[in-house]
Length: 373
Image (cartoon, rainbow, N blue to C red; front, side, top):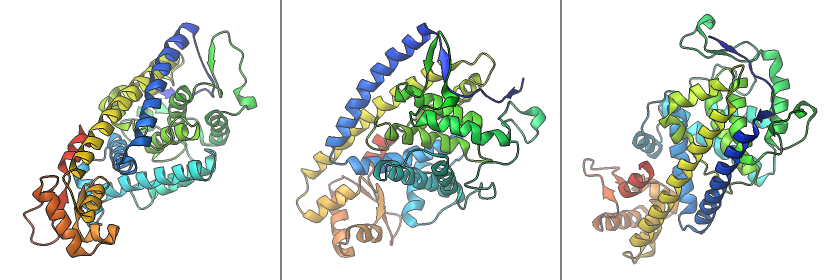
């Protein structure tokens, strides 16, 4: 059966379902507070966020079928060569960084104009470059197993409805009243003033269901998860990296998104799935912060020279690096960098590639194990 369109926001659920959701949100908000605190006190916080952003970008594009590995991403980034798949991952990072800067540093709301700009960045020079980057679609699209609309599993709203639906979503995302959000119900209504985590879960599903662009909706929708939580002050840094958890249960992820599009919308199923995935992600990040900090501080205790400590710190931002690249970043001369990296390798803090005579890479494998765990 083909599902068509979706209702505008807000969302109503039974009072008993709302209570269940509120209990879970309360538990997660406590853990989010701990995560924000741990990150603010971490020595390698910015480096950790950078490397986790790369991981999030990779996992989000994997959901859409990209096959590149994290090691391949680091390799191509280090060598400044980019396959189409790596370009997609790096574009995702660029879009996330741009959006974060606009919201956090320039106090911009999440608007249709910002969303269009992010879309243009996301698709620049990639397989979607011919899909009108930065503009809402002007034709009907659909989701299905092939390119035949008669086999579609879901047909989004018509193109001439997009502006209206996106205005409704915009006000909801930014926690603002609007006449399209007025509703009368005896149930619990998750509206523009709902808890940010609940609103974020609903926003993601609604954006995916509107499907305003010809390509890149999934990736952009997952970027909006992070940006919305920054915008609402739930997180200080762009660290809500839930894509890995969604990718682990990809079939359920898509099925539950379809569930909110049916006549009897299963918002409980979707919201609880999103919250549980978020909780697992937060637990994972807390462990990774702790292990990364321990790895760094234990390494510093074994180092003496300032250049060695600086390069060790850099290896938490660039876990795979060459002497040339490290010299460019740190402004140390290449001989100084080479000596420092060789010292780190001698202490088994990092590994020096042996198969090349020139342009050898130095690898922080222990950090990569922590990140990939």
